[in-house]
Image (cartoon, rainbow, N blue to C red; front, side, top):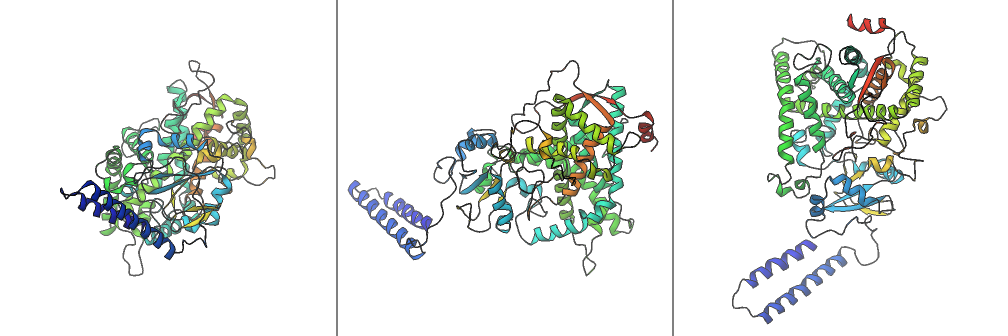
Length: 550
């Protein structure tokens, strides 16, 4: 109604001011008349709609900045890059643990308080169960055909059922166990080969990211490499290009693109995001689509009948009429989403944890001692050992807390007006839980910038989880729209971490700065410089030899 009054005033004023014969006095009279009409119309609407003082609406959360008309704080957003660091700097002046900033007509709600976070994603989970419509998610999901990134609705319900019932269930996780073990063994082979051929220098980021790319490739396509790979077990050009594209897409998902808040500007690509996303997706599709198309054809013509991987599972799913449940586009989009959801979190946590441990070697020694005590030195750590590796998991939790992969969680969108923590949250608001704001909050963490795994140990003998139910930090998101791959993500994180700690000693290269520089990159939360360390085998030689016999 307010917009209607404004539009009426603007259009009428435009008509009148085009008449050249109009006098200035008449012009002022017209302005005054329409101003009075607009205000009268506004207050009449407020009265009829219940705004008569009998019910008082809660206030919005504190504003980080006073917004401009129409565009909100988009001008400031464009000037202050990277946007997430600018927002976090503004949040330092807020004592409420919740604040609001407006981009276009969208209220963006930023939260750094665990208790308030729980009110959003636990107490009122259903109200915040949707996702934003954005350029990046639209193109990544082929028009919202997937699960994690799509708005709440029938398509999300369909794909969630597929994901939880067929692809990421506990039964399916057990079925895929051997594929995960193959990639854990290959990780050890790769690093062991670097110990002998590269003087022990290991780029931990490359090793971690490629392991985290190999696991979903093996699960989805039953292959480690798109090309020939390398004899030492490392990635070839194709795998490096593929993983680079994955991380590019991740960098531009929900990256505060102008057209996400002013949709009519989409296509102009004012900030260049669309071009970058299109290029990265083209690389992924170059490797994925030929495999998917060929496999679909093999199932159609009867050449393939055995289910060997998750792609086969998706293709072979049938409804009550024996028709495919998933279309080719749904399969392609969901595979892309699984790929981008799997690679970043474990690899980033392990790289940061090892960097912190190199500066505090007593922590690394304690973790390795736990593995020796639980597993011994005559065999490699396996998933069945994870229950008893609480200190290793505490180190991983501490990495998730102090060094999250992203500044915010995937945005939640309110599907209705509501009140949270005594603040009014309008329908359509984008809710951002600050991963750094939660994990580094001095009100909830003692010495928050110090890497201290012991803070996560309860001493009750209960197996430690990587998730944090009270949202004091975010490893894997929670609630209706929480991460559906927690079991897989936990397995990958702990296996990557435990194998690197069990199989090798790690030291800072003699020519490198000591201690390790723990500065963050400017544009993301990665370690500014990829971690390079010296690895040396720490197990009996026959343990490694067994890996080369397979």
